[in-house]
Length: 379
Length: 230
Ligand SMILES: Nc1ncnc2c1ncn2[C@@H]1O[C@H](COP(=O)(O)OP(=O)(O)OP(=O)(O)O)[C@@H](O)[C@H]1O
Ligand SMILES: [Mg+2]
Image (cartoon, rainbow over all chains, first blue to last red; front, side):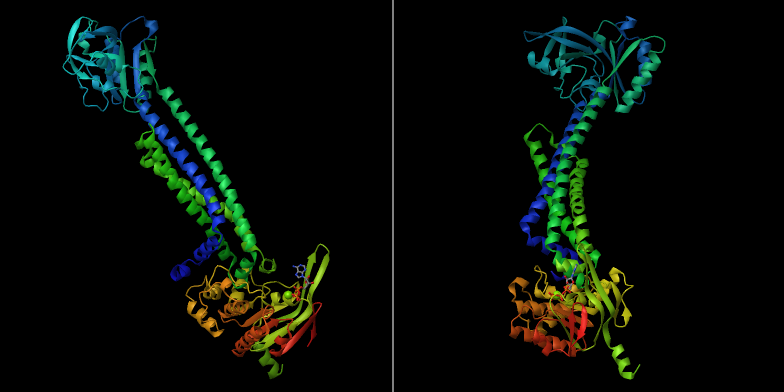
């Protein structure tokens, strides 16, 4: 005890003073606990939700789909269109030409209508991060999850698409994210299997959102200069709006949490005001025996900050624990909560809690320390 | 200046010259001290007596650099204190003046030793040893780690006395040092105070108590803020 006494006299005096009114100090710290808890839970949940949603939407925003413009009357894109798109996307992403039609699919005595896609590069479109989808597609059929389930297809099964027989070479994994294509209810064939030569769509999978934007702009300027040859479709703006919504939601949640910290600040202010008015005489004695105003101020501010440190630490720990528990009990993915970037939320909330307590204690401490000692002693 | 006067000036610890203290309040102004001349020498015990409201506590506060006079000068060991900043006054209080308050004013959260070394709390070094010695000297060697609520009134007064001495002050200022004590305990405190002054400290004790005046070298009588002599 003595060595901390010597080095941090303000801390020792502050701790003694707080321990004298445990209930009151506890209640004041509880205000900070609640405020910091609210900031941490709402902040972390908001962050995790928006991360999870962005991840879900991520690929979508990076896709640019180019198809023949209605005004042009064409059903397919010409080779020179494809070349222009390829040049626009050079270094910015993968270009996947796609043929699209509908068809009847039969197998094992079952029958269903499916989307039929023709492409030589199925992995870029349907198998992001999944090794089971081949990079290049030369023969056989790749079957979407729904179609596979309906017709009880496995790898190696035989399937008839519009009268032709194919061996199933791969099954597409069930897709979790939103996509403008519908691979679940589709059959993917190599593009030579289609009679028509042209492609009905070209999908550009850009490396980033910015690349997607650049590709879309460049395709527009290359192909739609004089007349509207192609229509360029990108979900960028939708994704942007969704992100913006999450940003707003986050801000709103944090503002609500912030209000509880303001309340906590007022409660610290109140408690400190009570404490210093009760201890007026004691503070007068400190001044009379030669303790400086700034030293008295330090003692009182350490008291207020201790309430913030304890309340903030408890609030940050409880809040983080609550969000982790929520994530394990619900669909909210845990990885989105445990992002390294999310560490700033409890740390920031803790710091804010301490700051709030300090601000709450500032005026009462100043008033007490600057009161002339004669008056304090008389009171 | 006669040699006698000169010696006296050198040993003067605190001096008031023409000190007037006026309080302005809603009802008008109250003159608590009027043109007071006063000095306390090394090793001298002075009693300040007078009826209630005559300005005794006010005089002690002015002597102890807690309060500033409306006019007149205060000298601490021959140096006027008028020009000192609040921080310098605080230092001067800590270095040169020991207070014993009427109602002890010990910090309830601190033990006897911690209360005694309180004036040194923010100074480098550890005054625990000195605090312990002082408590032993006032007969509280066995109450070192008791808190004030575990001590009797007389014991608290002795802790307060030890605290006043921890910085080896030039002057000890005591407001009603025996006010709350029975005769026996009061005598003990006064014996202590006498001993302290024999060590060279100048003592000013405000009192209503005739017992105190038996222990003092001289008595100053205040009536309505005016020094009326012995
Ligand atoms: N802060 C103040 N404002 C106005 N008047 C004051 C103030 N402090 C003291 N006084 C007045 O100054 C006068 C002297 O007060 P002081 O406390 O010095 O008396 P005292 O001799 O110590 O009395 P007691 O023996 O009752 O303690 C009193 O009339 C008192 O009302
Ligand atoms: Mg008085």
